[in-house]
Amino acid sequence: MTTSTTSTLRYFPPMGVYETLFKFLDVCGKYMGEPGTHPWAQGFPVTSQLPNGPELPGSVSFDSSDLKYPPATGIPQLLSAITEYYNHFYDAGISEDNVCVFAGGRPGIFATVAFLPAEFEILIEETEYTPYYDLLHLLDRSHHIIPSHEGNAFQPNLDDYRQAWSTMGQGGRQFYIKSNPCNPTGVTWTGDTLRELVDFLISGEHGGLIDEAYEFFSQAGPESALKYIPNIDDTNLFVSGAATKNLQVPGMRIGWIVSSKRNIEIFRNYSSIGMGGVSRPAQLYVSQLLETARVKHARQAIAEYYDSQRQFYGHALADLGIQLFTGTGGFYHWGKLPGELNADELNRRLFEYDAAILPGRLCDMHRHGENGDSNRFMRFSFGPLLEESRQEDVEILSKCLGQQTT
Ligand SMILES: Cc1ncc(COP(=O)(O)O)c(C=O)c1O
View 1 (tube, rainbow, N blue to C red):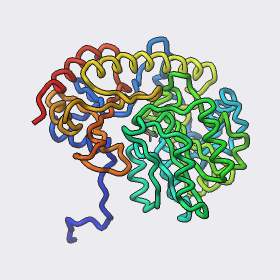
View 2 (view 1 turned 90 degrees about the vertical axis):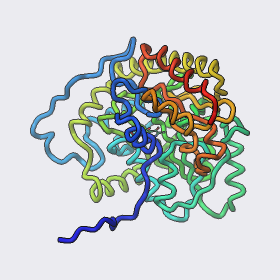
View 3 (view 1 turned 90 degrees about the horizontal axis):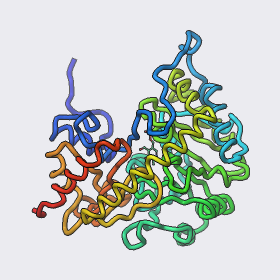
View 4 (view 1 turned 45 degrees about the vertical axis):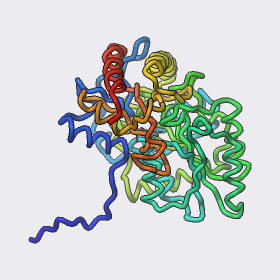
């Protein structure tokens, strides 16, 4: 047999967070997140019980019937737990037929964009969740970028959305993708602003995906766009949720999309072709976490713990000369580095302490690169951090930010 060093597959690079993880592994010889590392580049939450929070079960029980193939859109227990969750907290008026379970948040988002007809132009904010960029390019999607930069304090509003729509030639069809709270900026649309976004999407007969991976991490309290969607079956809206951050279990790989029955049927058919459903034990585990009293407790504990971390690191970073643009949600700080420092140079310094941040260039949907304006920004994650690490974190940052730019 002959072997070839050239792949028959089309090459593409890893998603930005993993690019940073792989670079860290090469330089530090450690996987970021291992004990002793400072994983400020990473988007995972604390995976143990939070102060005043509910326990995270240490086991899941299942029997031989759970070793069978799962149903294509999800097991009945999880579909009903997700449905009850949105109906209880947001009066969403959905049924189990409006939900499809995926192996985490990303596969549902990927499937939505993959099956969107080519006539849709995608609208997306300039500073957004890293793999949205990969999706647009890998799937060769025509798209339009809504300004979100220092000039508008990374806070585009609905007028920017309307303007983008009006300049696009209204004959075409638009599909909006937005993380809310936004990763990396933490800017969060709530209340009337969120209602107006939903109304705009529905009345203009636009499609849209609202990615609520950080739903619980909001100073104003958790909120879902489903609260404002009168009848999801009459829309082309997709609300993406996941157990990853909100329920503190990234390793379970459970996410979901809530959409019209017609759209869920398409996901079901996709699952039958390309996925075969999602692990039953993982679905059973997450079903327990969504039990109403427990999840109510979790929503409170997350908001409380992460508000306090957001505040602590906000003050600490500002004292170190970082100009913050962070909103009121998520578990990241988004800030401009002092002087001429760029984020890759900061990482070279941080690597010496087994620490790293996410360079701003990787959240830039234009990808202007290491010397672009976006790389004067960093995303600092306090998601995985316990309160015990505060002092050491500040010491390392202080040493690395204090050095002269080379
Ligand atoms: C905005 C946003 N959406 C979705 C996800 C999905 O995460 P996962 O695929 O790990 O469930 C993440 C994780 O970082 C995220 O930040």
